[in-house]
Amino acid sequence: KLEQWDAAMEVVERALARQTVPMDASTADEVVTFVLRRFEQVLLEEGVRIDLIRSVLNRRGQRIRFASETLQAVQKLAETDSFKQAMTAFSRPVRLVSKQQVKGEVDPKLFDSPAEEALYEAFAGVRGRLHPDVPLPQFVEALAQLQPAIDKFFADVFVMVDDERVRQNRLVLMQQIADLASGVIDLTEIEGY
Image (tube, rainbow, N blue to C red):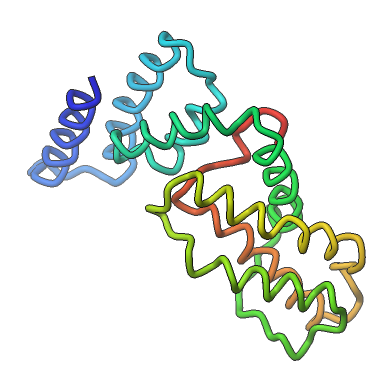
């Protein structure tokens, strides 16, 4: 089955690339979304949870085989305590920056707390290992490594301080942590997030 879905997505992408009739990007997106929703329906009929399907297809849907591997992994991991704890820890930075326009780079010179420094060091330690092609278990392992530092940060540090530079620096750190999931999985879709 996966070969058929991979082939279908490949045909759609080739057809869109060779399209001679002018069309805007939203039309191409609609075609891809149509194929993904059909695949989603097949997975639902096989008994896969909708929240897990969407969490994977939102990030890896263009590559059906890879999405399927990720979906199998998230089904195994979703009920484990380590996954739930990592998801809870990760949700804090994501929620904090979800409605903010945050850009820039972290300036460690603006840190005024050991918890802030520890989180940045933990983040720097996992950032290089995470990329859109990382297998989900490695991603969850990296989040688990960040969890204690995230918990300590939120226990000891108030992000929304009056000092604009410090506040922005902390928000940038939160945004960079939130961006770790980019291309991997959309944790916001998972029940209990």
